[in-house]
Image (cartoon, rainbow, N blue to C red; front, top):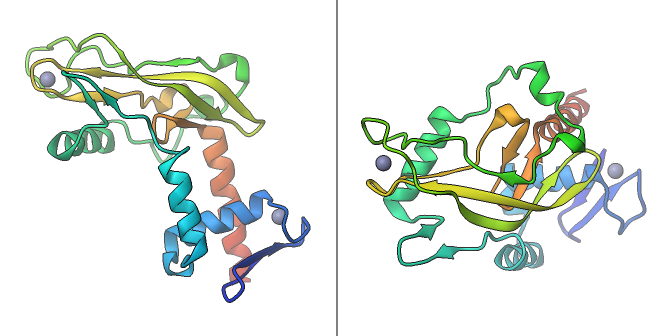
Length: 200
Ligand SMILES: [Zn+2]
Ligand SMILES: [Zn+2]
C-alpha cells in the first residue's frame, strides 16, 4: 500500500524507508501520472520535465533525406500503422511472454518490414538506419544496455517504420527504452493487485 501526501509531496511505502524508492512507489507514481496528473504540480512536474528534456528523449535523426521522429502527417501515419497492424494482442501466446531469458534477446532491433506497408506493388523499403545506438531493454531481472534500434524508410512515399515486434517478446516504448512483454505483464499485475487492495 503506497501513500501519497499531496500537501508535502511525499510518498510512503511500508517496504522501504521514507526516501528510498521501491517498485510500488514507482508504479503508484506512474499510475497517478496517467490518471490524476493534476496531483503533480510544482517541483515534481518540473523535475520530470527536465529529465524528459535530457536523458529520456530520443535522439533526433536529421539529415537531408531523413527526419526521425517525423513530424505532422508523417508521424500520424506511423502511429496509425502501429495501432492497426502492430498492436500487442490482448491474449498473448504463452511462448511470447515466456521469452524472457537474456541470452535470447537480440541487440540489433531492426523492423521486420521489407516492403512499404502503404505503397502498392510491394515497393522495397530502404536500408535500415540507426535511430538509437544506446537503447536499453528493461527486463524483470535488470537492464540490458548497448542495444541499437533501427528504422526503415520508403523512398517513394516517405513512410517510416520502426522496430515494433511483439512476437519477439518486446515492446518498443520510444526507440530508446524497450520493455520485455514479461516485464509489461509484471507491471500490469502489480497494478491489478493494487486496484484490488483499494477496492476491498
Ligand atoms: Zn514498496
Ligand atoms: Zn511507400
